[in-house]
Each structure stands twice: as structure tokens, then as C-alpha cells.
Image (cartoon, rainbow, N blue to C red):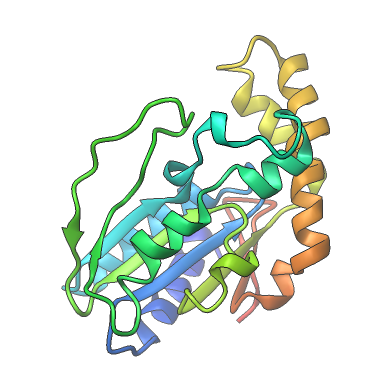
Length: 222
């Protein structure tokens, strides 16, 4: 069984094998608590160690819509989470399209803090023509973003693992473990189930990582 470093090396090789005339846009997709952010941070570091190219690291959690704009569904519902949480227009037009074919390479790395309560003063930056974008987040294969990625990695874990890890992680900032369990059971997991059912992201991604055991993830579809 491959260890984490070996799998990260395989992923880095896959990233650097993508040949484009514009920055390479890598998306790390998956459900809550799947391990997307850790994988993205580590993958970016490995890629930096193997090339002199610029690596742009972005978290899609910083592209959430303002809460007051999420009015189509009850605020704590699965539908609000799936359909209204993220500003797909901004993700596309201010990050992915500028780095894509014919883009001017001028991008921003976010709009708001991860709670979406605070507007960020984020500068517009210009990526190098051969830069590599490593972006992680939920719902990266929604229709609004199709055609905007050059390599898609899906991080798979079971919904049982999502619930367990989510409670362990989020009870630290929520009022209790019970509150975290309620949030995941009624909002996050049902919303992500909608995504899995409608988009089938594991089938559509270029690479799939089974991350049930983070110390020894498995590259299930190279």
C-alpha cells in the first residue's frame, strides 16, 4: 500500500504533465471533512519542490456569497447550502476564466472570510503564464464551473466518515458536538448527497483519491 508521500508524488506528476498555453487550473473536489484542504496544501508544496513555476493556492471557501443574498431557501437547509452558499459567478469570472484560454491572468483569491461575514480586501494579482493553480473546495464540478478546470481531483470518503470527522472538527467552534452533528445531518450531508446524485463527481473527475485513511490514501482511478 502506498503511503501519503508516494501518492502526493503521483498527483504532482499528474499536475505537471498537464500542458496548456495558460496557467493550469487544478481543482480538488470533495465533501466536507474529506481532507481537501490538507491535500491541497501538501500537493502545492510538492509541486513547488519539483518545479520553478509559480503555484497559486486558493481555497474556494473564500468565495462564499453574503448570507443576506441567500434567500431562495431556508438558511439552514440542504438546498441553501448546495445552491446558494458559493458565488459561482465570482469563482468563474474572477479566478478561473482569467487563468484560462485567452484570459488576462489577473485574478483574486477570495471575496470574504470563510464565515462569509467579513469582506476581504484582496488584491488583484497577475499569475505567470505557466503558473499552476491548486484550488480546493466543495461542489467544484457544478454546471456553472464546467469547462473551467484543466485537472480535477476528487477526494472520496463515506458520508459516515464525513459525519465523524465533521463533528470532531466543528464542535471546537460550534456550541457542542450535538450541534455539529445536527448541522451535518440536516444540512451538509444532505446537500452533498444532492451534489453526488446530480453531478456524480467521482465518475467525472480525472483522478480519484480514497482518503478514508489519510496516512495511506489510495489513488483509485489514475
